[in-house]
Figure (tube, rainbow, N blue to C red):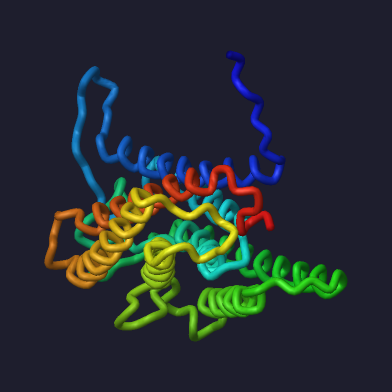
Length: 305
């Protein structure tokens, strides 16, 4: 028998492949980290093992381009999948913080140089050679976010469109953009940029990363309690079990990540934060993959309704 033609609409196909692309973005990020961790020299079969303290530290390695590109791509995919229910609103908020993880790097520990970079004092720092790039990225982020929010608000007003959750997401977006610009450029506030907070969170990067992973964890937790949209294909018993497992493991992993951040000095060379972040991303990719096929044939998924 000849294979049947796919009768899915363009909107359905866009929804499917945007969702799949997010899984592959996570995969690309983890692959780049793995390749950089297992150092390969020019000599045949000469491998090493040099894990860094966290995935964010790979910003300072040749994996930087993939790290930054993956987070920007993930942000765009999440925004394109914007929908109407609580889960998709949370993903919109996560999309606001994903670029900041890439644009504002983590600090380098003075005792653990990365790729030849070090800090002059006893505390963590972002090497001076990167600070102009970071400030330029923050300025661009603030201008683009504010422009996008205002543009979409004008479009909705002219067309008489009401989008549930748009107000909350817009307020968070504008507030984040203004606060980030202030911390980077206002004299007095920007003295220690990007370590403006004390004692916790210790840096802007730490704060946005914690928010991002917290929101990521909240989405599987919401779905583990049952369908949250009446139009979606109900999950099978196996899919519900996956969502419950992912939710439970996500909570445990976030607690582990928080403890690892707080006690990172006591952990020494144990890359617990790196492992925790890799596990969190893998769990979300697992959840996202399973849910993509749960909704594969939905005629009216939340993000294209």
